[in-house]
Image (cartoon, rainbow, N blue to C red; front, side):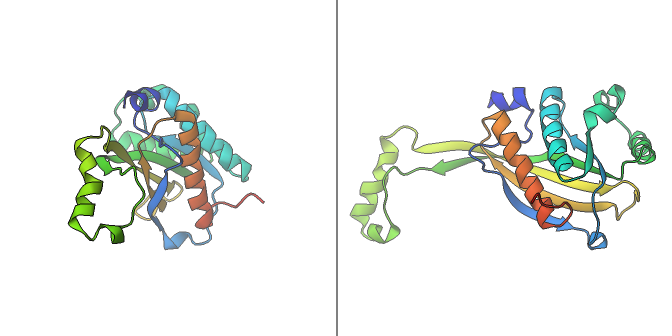
Length: 211
């Protein structure tokens, strides 16, 4: 799947709106927490893909009264383009806090699974397959029909929000894990993933809904 690597480097894509929240956790210390000034980070080396994701998520947060900015406009080039030590990153966090930001929203790919799905072209129920002859009749097509098995990839994406005003072990505000199946189209799938994240944040009452 070269489209993914070229367009957004294994980040934030799926086909047919297949983004699915698989797990989430909200820190109980942040029951009444509201986001105000957020840096949006898409963790990818591909500048174009990063800008697409960050800009569109920034716009969605802005619509909800949250001041958000893209990391491509906040981080200096040497920070984005070279490996950073923990000390370097801590200094960057301090700089963000001193500049008035109170949180960072970051997304990254945490894993990729290659799967094979079994596709049967004919409608049937398992109740109709109680006889061996009928069962064999339906499934013999695996020998004769190309494309009977379909390969696809599932991307596991994690989005987290950190409170950078209290940069300690309790600074994680929320984390959500999403599955994205067989990504193909950049623009549509980025939008779908963003809306999945926004919906999750609304449900957790970390951002307000648009009336």
